[in-house]
Image (cartoon, rainbow, N blue to C red; front, side, top):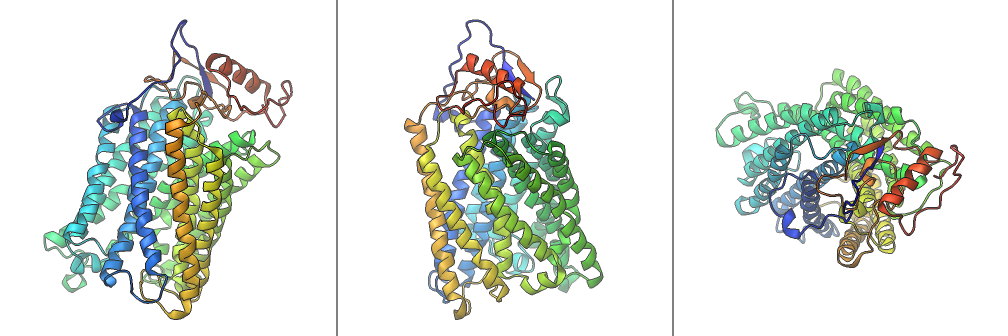
Length: 567
């Protein structure tokens, strides 16, 4: 389903002009809120990235020579993991959802605009609480915060950490409820569920996971805070508690949370690959329903994080479910390959990051099936193999998808184009830096190097030097993106309404969109991925008459040939 707006005669079609101050105050405009989410998330990414560089600096040598002691190193990797998850990936995906979902549905805003703003404004104090731990003794139990380290031995910053996650969790739940209601009730006439863009499907599946799983995190954090400040003993075995209670409740949230971070990336990839390959999505319904399958099966696999502490008779069922969940993900991979097969591919930066996602996420998926196997998981448990797998899924998956989305929707959000030369440089540095940072960690992990340690056996130093140098290159790549963003905002080329000649609704209005998103009432187009059809050709022709044709638009192919690979 896509639209063209039928503007009223004489209506001014100039893009909306906003000041920086508009993004620094309360607003109920979903587009401003989306940019606020993304801006805050990029700040978190910079902070988390700096912490990652400090980790790799420390690990250049086997000795403890950068951090003052092991406790300081514990605080360092705790904050790195917490910030990257709760202040970067999750808010960034929420930002994409807030900006794009109403536009893709042809709606003027989210179902509950005030609640949408409130959900965002819970995040700045959440991040502030997390960083305030440095003044009270920072959290040092890792982002998983296992007792008894998180209850009996950590300083007051651990309590602030738990409170920060409480606020972030409330924000996520409120946002998810808003998304579900918006998607259910604000679709235009004629748009059924199976005419929605696949990014909207991904946000819907993600929101269902958030609503079902995040209350369990809230419960676990409440028990943790009570143990720390009220003298309870939920996780203290000496007084009748059980540390494994935390593991079960925490991972019942945190494994589905992996899909909270990755599912929106799947949706981004479906949009990017189809547009830049000029091909209809292969297996639309399979991709849509596999998102819901992941949301359902994701709640049955949490205990594979506990194979070393789980009762032996429970290991096999969770091993089976952990392998089954690879099936809906595999459906997506093959559908995306079918989408680009035979397409008229334009190797723009967004498409390069989309293809990079495919290669990196497949590696993460393969290593995921490996750690789902009980014997292998016990061998590599708490080693760098797990670190490698985790980052191939979340960086090679979620972050590569975020980059693809940034390059794809930046013109719509800002009204300006990103420099493709800088974008390609960013991609090359990111791809090389990421691969050589995390792929060698498979080897050192299988050889026995434990994670979360600053002092390691000297025989691992050569590999760690390679990993650290690649990590520094990965860090440099981020500054290329930031520089490209600044250049674009200052003097970037003006973007047309639809620079990629896409068919989904967000491209059927000005760049950036007006306050009410569309001029007049949107008129639906029957197929959001119908590239290569005669109907798509005439739709895009009409759209360009109304809003202007991009200077570098791809040439139409086969005007009267619906089966053609272009439009």
